[in-house]
Image (spheres, rainbow, N blue to C red):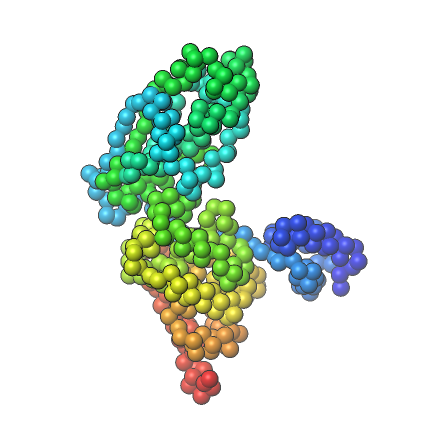
Length: 431
């Protein structure tokens, strides 16, 4: 039984959750429980505590995705096919006025996935960048994807370009926190003496422009290697910038589906496009094709984005319906354990990318009767999947990123599902 004092504290958690849209992070609840006296720490009290919060309308979520070797993070330097002769990067020295002109005419794209990180720098740091130019201190090099000569994508230098745009083009930034030119404190660009304005415009900068002949996978790799912004870009954010079009629109739209959020227990973050990456993984294994996987996860997902952008790749409505169907089925069958490793301790673990992909594809391939059987037999599914998750051989292929292990994950889960479905049918219990 929960004491009145514990319930009072739980009500404070409820208030915190209500202030966040009725959601509490599982870590918050776990830490609350850990701080309780040892005399009341028992599984039944923990379960009662969770029910208490749920009855108050608070949804408990986990914002974790399991990190494992299947991401292929150690293999980002490998590109297949890799032909160094196709890397075409042009180095130019130019006056800052040329870049300012491009910014003024909208020829530098600030509306990609990177735009929301454009405000990382404080006004003081922006002002000190301007002061560096007045002091004639060389600026770090700028990197652009120049595949479209009229619309450069920023690879590295967003914070600096944003600062220059706010000060020189928009004329809204007031200089503050200067160390040497203190007399310019509080001034906008339009208020500067011409000699200082000219010094900014005539600042020499070095630009590296990745030209249009460079293959898209090579461009992706360059983005990952070069970007040094204040917040390291996630792979999906880079894809968002490189594959503008239908692919970006579809990933964003599907990530907002209620069934997807429910099946993943609202645990996939949208601020770093983690949710959109999981949508893309569904597209990759269900539409792009598991046969396209060659051992490098990033290249595989890049290919799925390219596939989505093709005019006749897949009908939007069909994709949306099948995605919702699979997510709804996963939630009905596995509930809060959907897409996660199981263990005999009953604890809910983070979402596992490899398990997510394998479940998505296998549920996608089943017909309505077969999905109904798995839902009817969900306790059996849980038991069988628990046995699978406790198998060393299965855990090994979950962690590996090679082509054989990738295929084996789908086969093992398909065999488990098919066994349950066939047993049910053989017993004569049909719809």
